Image (cartoon, rainbow, N blue to C red; front, side, top):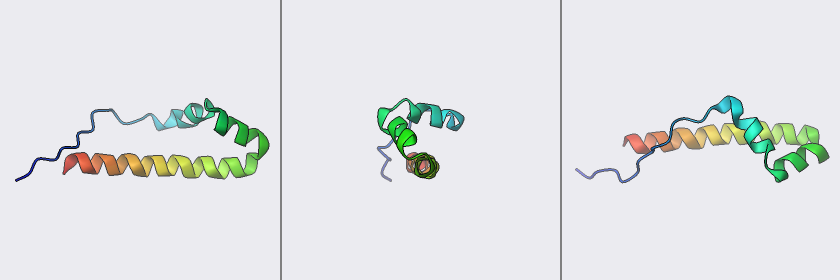
Length: 63
């Protein structure tokens, strides 16, 4: 049996702080100022995608 080389050694992110984290980046902050409605939709999608990626990493580490 082959051992999985991928090891996830970080704890799960605090998703309640995700928005604060991305708003610390100029690109997201500028988007919110310029296109607030579109930015909100994109921020929701960004968080959803980040959660999906993290879940994928967790599954890989369990294989």
